[in-house]
Length: 538
Image (cartoon, rainbow, N blue to C red):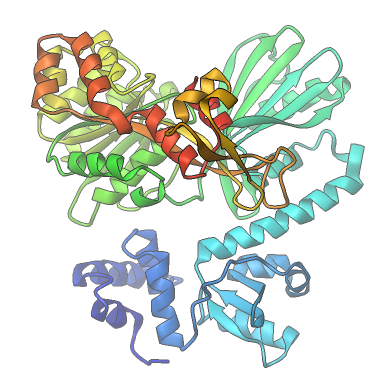
């Protein structure tokens, strides 16, 4: 244990700079209810959770808990789940016995409460707040599932519970679809729709009107198409819900997209890009100006990747602004402006206004029309770094799409820096995946393109799954292809030789193509042949 203040300790360990410490102390000094210094540094992305945990451990004389964080349900119940969430403390069974892992070792209320319940001999460890929160969410999900079994039909029209269940399951979408027999609810989890529950048809109109009321849509207005949004709080997690309604043949059909406003932006290195792709992205990020585009279908992680790239570049000395629809994650040190068509704030108007704020970096959530494309190109030409997304199937098609949006090919050639096209594939559960030796002759035709040798070991999902996964899969990772615009490709674009660009990309990509990236994950046992075919094709 040391009496040295955290700021001095972090400076000595070169985890932060004097300027960053000055910023955090100034913010702390301006607060009525002062936050801890580590919390403020983390909010501004100036200090990682790992670095903070080790520094707090050094300060307190505790040890960082480095085993898998699996909460002890009985101990959590005894401690109280609301208290555990509020103070970010989780009891775990380790090889050494029961240990209490805290995000803040100086939370005296938490340590006193634990010792009052479990005795003065309770052993404490420091841990990463996000890992503690994840362990508590698993306990909360299990408790919710047990509660649901006993309530049955009592909650068939309980919208609050449905939203809570979706958030607890980490679903990205809720699909509410009436059929001739019932109202079927499916959740999209890890990119795949899964049946969740049914509502009786007699409750359909009331169910839809509850959502309409929260989204400020007139009750009973079922014959029009609607796009709206509202916020929902599921415990400590706040989500932005985007509602889309269509008048289907069996009645109103809803899709609710859930965007977790409390989740933190991920680091570039944690997204799962292949090393070759990371190298291309790093080279593109070093360019002082130009446009970096992320392409792919809805739900492929484009915005998450953009946030990670912005996080890689932003610091106190850079002015970063964004226009988004909606703002999915709150980014410190970034001025974020939401699109609001009703107020006349669309992408191109906000982008033009942002240029007057003398930004170094601009994030345009999506280039969806000619005016937005023109503003993004204008920003890049005038020396700004611009990040945005397009809906195209591959990297080279982004050039065609910009041309379709009226951007002159010489402007494309002189402003486009890099295009990354990506998808998300489900990861096999490492605890229940099964091993299989295959040859090209033993697998379907569509799977053969993902085999790297005449005979190799691959892994398949256990359809029944296990306690740690869903049908043999757990989580997702990215596959991609990255096209760096060099002088050769720039010349082809200027000369409108787009077909030649496609040929050059195909020749050059090799192991960097999306198919080969998927094959790499198959070979490493990260994903399955089935999943590669499902996402990329045969």
